[in-house]
Image (cartoon, rainbow, N blue to C red; front, side, top):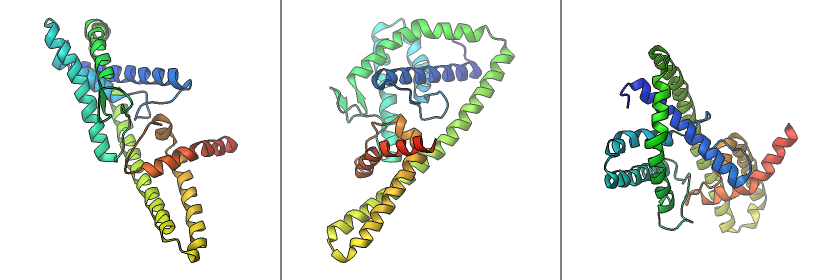
Length: 254
């Protein structure tokens, strides 16, 4: 394998793009509609690119040792998915995917079925796919390889920064809506008749705020309909209840 940083960057971006295509195809198969399944606005799923590079570096050298290779092919992507899932949970208090409905899962972050699937795919990836990808990159002039790596990674980096900002805004928006929801629940618990008008105003404001949040964060909501969170549970339920209504508003605006 080429050790050039530019080659690694191009491989990372290539496998991130292929992972994005795999996610989109799988979602289209289940839902019969196109959805951008990546965190980024562009066609990249960095977790796939990261997993691919880790596999090449940590597991690839042991291809001639079947037992070690099989264990590595199972463990490396599983640990990556677990770490990313836990980190996202800690940062945003939400699960961006959930395997709780699958057998032999660990807290919904990972499950045996997908871990085995990634492990089997690793044989195809390291034995067949990656040699083709490396051969294609090696056939490029070195100057073009460097230029492509710098330009494409720059676009990727800008997209990443923008997406991180959007994710921070997404969490802040959920926090704000949740605060309003909690206030409504407290008012309901008080059961004071004199607060009826205030309650109507508060509910109306909450619904408007919720609609604005859905329209502003439509891409994340569409991309991750399985998003779950014990902390934001009530708000996420309200969001799902209001999504169809907001979509109708958008169609009327167009």
